[in-house]
Length: 274
Length: 270
Image (cartoon, rainbow over all chains, first blue to last red; front, top):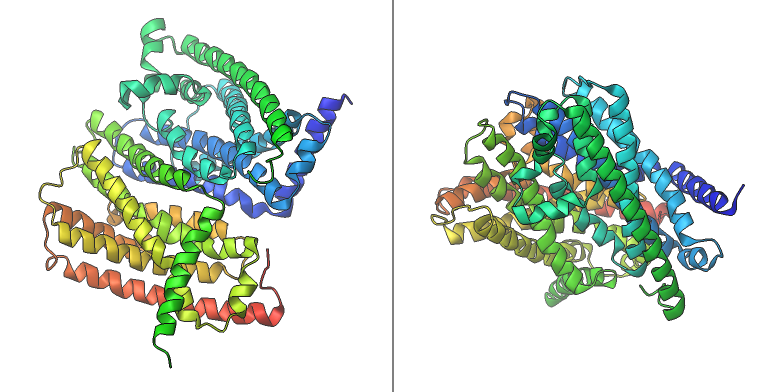
């Protein structure tokens, strides 16, 4: 097996083993999205229209994001507590490959979060989940998950340098829920927030997911203005295309940052103090 | 008996447990997070409410309802989440056996640990109120300031009792952080923060009445609308009763699990 793949696989395997040894850690990842979805569904209870599905898809998206952010932040913190971060950085393997392996495992858990929220919504809240195009729905979900993971890589690189990774994790969770418009149209946000929303992969991902589920009306307004109100299929692929471009940019930034962080932490010798 | 001793233990416990968090958290980060958390949690639910308003399915008043509910709920991040985590941090830092080895009376230690978080929680609410007024246009023109201050203090104090209760309970478990997450977030469901508790199924409403925040949020909304201290006295009495019961139960749990941990040698079960 090529060396990078071997490192990625080992990191993935170790993350899975950690999770299986202490599965209760999945609870902090899912509790916020679950509670937010519950609150939104209760608020939308009396409303007519596709609000239920809107809340559920948003909640699922939040579940993926919460899991990725929490895992990337807490993984670094955990290494510091265990005293293994120095060994991981000192090893000849590329740190990015180690973190990427973990991100893949986090992505897998993130997918289970989304599925869990969908199932709870369907069976506990009785929200009708009429997915118009299951194939595109599944595809957009997986691609969004990859985009979220790539964003998590950027955060993970910064988390290596700080001793407040867990605080960042808690602090970044809510702003991304707000800015990505996971549970309401981003048109409601102040105009100066829109550029931030548009550079987030999850914004386009959740839009694609909604279109695939049959909610063209909930899509980004300017897309539908551009391609026509009835052309949800084209809007879907535009969403996916933009998201993939943003994801590639995330990966490029993450590679750059990891190199910088690795060099800085080796040169300054402040890894343990951070 | 030296009467000053319990006070000294109470004060040192309060100061040290609060200062301990700066071992892993830079003070500027602590302050930044206060602003970010207050704004983003409130904004999230306010925009959900706004979404309903734009489609004509909710009255405009829902914005103030949600903003005030979330502003008061902010104190739970300090008085519940942080207080539950005190035990967790003690375990990770290796200070729990030292604490339990001291001859100091447990009650001032136990209650003192939460006290600075009460003041910290009040600061969080003040910041959140500022956001509610200046960003979301909530009208505080009729508010009874004294009544509101007392509501926020009593809610913070009694919610720290709730935090101590859960913290005492989680003393026995490996990761109190998991409990901290669960019990802080579910307050958003049970305490009338974003919707009236009557919207919950009947059995779940019973849970709402056991949490001081439920009464505190209600009293806070009334004080902002102009209710005087006398008007909200019955609610404050309920806050106090539920809060004192929480503290007493928490203390009993704390002592019981201390006893079990000493007997089984699992003080640092991490």
